[in-house]
Image 1 (cartoon, rainbow, N blue to C red):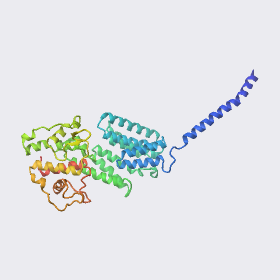
Image 2 (image 1 turned 135 degrees about the vertical axis):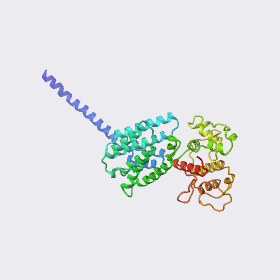
Image 3 (image 1 turned 90 degrees about the horizontal axis):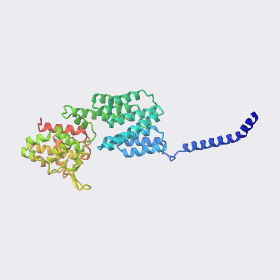
Image 4 (image 1 turned 180 degrees about the vertical axis):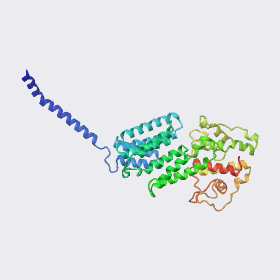
Length: 412
């Protein structure tokens, strides 16, 4: 019996070895297949795509950034930094979405990508990039205790020992203080924001983040001045920190801070002030600041008139359209005329042969408004000498302009 067992085993061994050999070959082939890179062209690497994507974020080209991060993941599905980049993209989209359903989808994706970036981060540099993506996501997205969570992430990132030469995009740890400064600015913690930006400026003379920090420090100073004595609470502070403002934002600012309804009642006539707008455009039916927009429409504020929309075949307010400096000058001039009752302001600069601004001709429909607001110090030209009418208006710029206008016409 023992012999048979031994014999039987001996007869089976070649078969066992053959099966094992086949399995081993299949495993090797399978592994070899996975190791074959899908991206073989020069420069077609996850690292290159990631860096280009991050640079696109700097320029607010979020669609380009998303495409580059997705390509990086296609090249290497375990490349952690690319997932962090995608998280930032979707966090930004969350901040831009006004529809709560769409916003919740992007919010969920941002959180999922951050989690994946953290799980896949292997090197200290990848972990550092992951922590930075968390801070940047929090700058765009609201959440419970987001400030405390961002602080904790910042402290954790500070303890990571990294080789700066291996930080493909961020290049130095200065980026950590810079983005934490932006988080403080968004939280309206202005002194903490200043301290963070100052830390970047003091870290070294020249570097990737010194220029960014200098501009952010100056912005913080302007925002702090703009919000000093602000009367509209959180709404005003929210507008103040925005890099751009919308027509809806400006309507809120004019009604809540400038109180144009009361102002025009006093300066024009009670009977005229009590009238209602001719009609309410359909695109503000569910807008959260509908009443403020209706007030602006009622007074027919120049620069914030209704716009005819070809696709809708109707006049709309378009509250989400960005306000540029040319439009802002028209708004401020119109309020100046209505508040003072001085119609001569509307033609004060007609007939000029030469403009002080190379980008605004005397024949431009903006010229009179631009001259009225700049000569009174309500708005300023750029350091280049141009007015730049097509540049978007920032939140603090709008608030400071409105505040100066109030002082010019002695509005209490």
